[in-house]
Image (cartoon, rainbow, N blue to C red):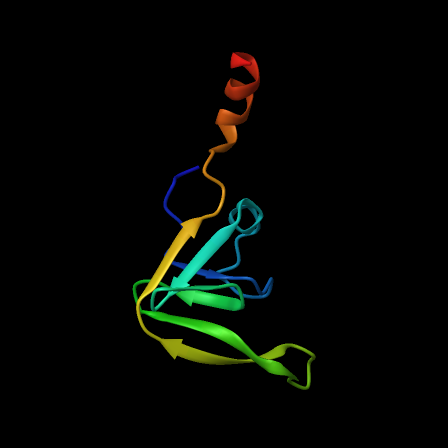
Length: 92
């Protein structure tokens, strides 16, 4: 796996930008310099995020979202790659 997160990612399984292994690894989002934990979807190159609009849902039960524009930074929350886990145990 690479250490750069994807340019466009969504947590909605029906989206073409959904990627389960990347989401399991953990993605952190910084939007306009502040840490955001409520991001449903983001695009770094286009400079926007989608966040849920309170507890409102559409007629299909999916959360209503609003698009916010600004500088977006994405990073992996874990600092280790998957292959590095065994190396730490062998050194101890």
